[in-house]
Amino acid sequence: MLDWELTNIGTQPIGTSAQSQDDKDYTEPPAAPLFEPTELTSWSFYRAVKAPTKCSTVGIQGIAWSFGGMIFALVYCTAGISGGHINPAVTFGLFLARKLSLTRALYYMVMQCLGAICGAGVVKGFEGRHQYTLLGGGANSVNPGYTKGDGLGAEIVGTFVLVYTVFSATDAKRTGINPARSLGAAIIFNKDKGWDDHWIFWVGPFIGAALAALYHQVVIRAIPFKK
Image: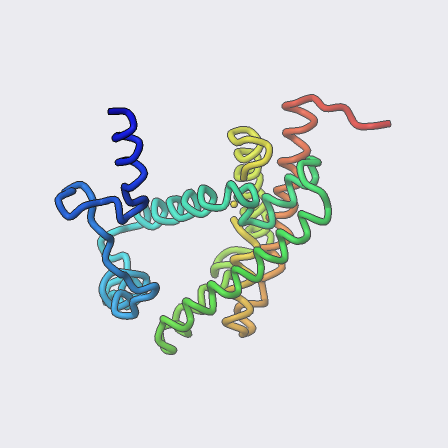
């Protein structure tokens, strides 16, 4: 009996061929295209860009939720690769806190900026020329009625809160207001309006990140300075 079972097992096919036509729990997956252009016009980013009434019913809270959800997804997807570094300000803060080497921090910042430029280029490609110009290409600038000092202060405070939250609520190796995003939009838009106040969106976040790193390392964790 044992000899028959061993002989029978040895003659059984291996792999997918072992599945008989009577096996209802297994079916060969159908072939699928790697890229389907028609999907762009049905439900994806293209449809969102071309919507006739953008955010008319979503409101400010909806925009905030979508932005936060996007950051969550990006950090989650890249956490196992780079630690979720998608913001130069956060990377700079972690470098000052000695969580990253200088070389790694510089590489991350360069890649973050290149990614932002590519992303801004994709948006320009999907947007109509008139609409893109009307919206200023998404480039950051200080709103009328506010001074450059107001804008700088807002960037410092906002980035301080962001980077301090990263230090306090995440693992030391996990982490993205975003200078790379500002740079990408300014380069693709490439008009004076996009560059006039651009320095604010680099200086402010980096000052805020430095203050957050200093506060967390010295005040919260009470790490003494080396003599």
